[in-house]
Length: 274
Image (cartoon, rainbow, N blue to C red; front, side, top):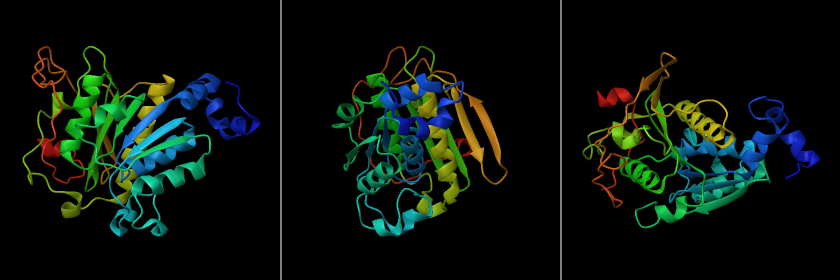
C-alpha cells in the first residue's frame, strides 16, 4: 500500500521511529484489534489504537453510558449519556481518525458468540469488568490460538499480562486457576478506583497491541506487570506455565467454553491474590 500525503503527515511521528518506520505503520493499518469492554480500560486503549492507525478495531460492550462512568471512561462525554457505549466509542474513534474501520458489537460476550467474534482479529484486549468474562476470554483465545492482553484495576492498583499461543507461554488460567467465589472480591463500585489508573493500564494494553502488530519490543508474555499508583512503583512478576492448566496444559480438562455466573468487578491487583 502507498501512503497518501495526509497519512504521511498523520503518522510521521511513528514513521521516524526506527522500531516502527514505514513497514511498521503499514502493519498497523493492515492490522486488527478487538477490544472487549468500552469502559475504563477499553476507552484509552481504543483512543490510542485509533490514533495510531490500527486499520480495523472492533469494540464489544452491552452497556450504555452512565454518569458514574465519566470519571474514568474518557472516550465518552456528558452528551453521550444513555447512548450505547459502543456507539459513543465508535463516533469518537472515527472523529480521531477516518482511516480506521470500527466494528461494534452491542451485546454481551458469551460462550455462544465469542469464537465467532474473535476469529476476525489479530489481537484481543480484555477490558472487561468481571471475572467470568475474563476467564471466558482467556479460554476462548487459548482454544482459538488468539493472542490477547488481560488487565484489571481496583482502587490505586492495576495489572496486566499478555498471552500468545506459543510453547511455554502461560495463560491467565495458569496464574488464576478459577474465578473467585461470588462477592469474595470488592467491586470498583464498592471499593472505588482512581480514574487515572484506567488510563495508565489501558494505555499499556494499547502498547501491547501495537508491539504485537509491528513486532517492536518485547511483550508481557510470561510476566505479570503490576502498578501501584500511590507509590508509582511498577513490579514485574515472572509467570511459569502450568503444565496442568485446565485449558492450556498438556492434558486440558476444559474443552468447551463455560459461562460462569456473572459477578460485577473491575479487576484486582496481584496483592489481592496473596
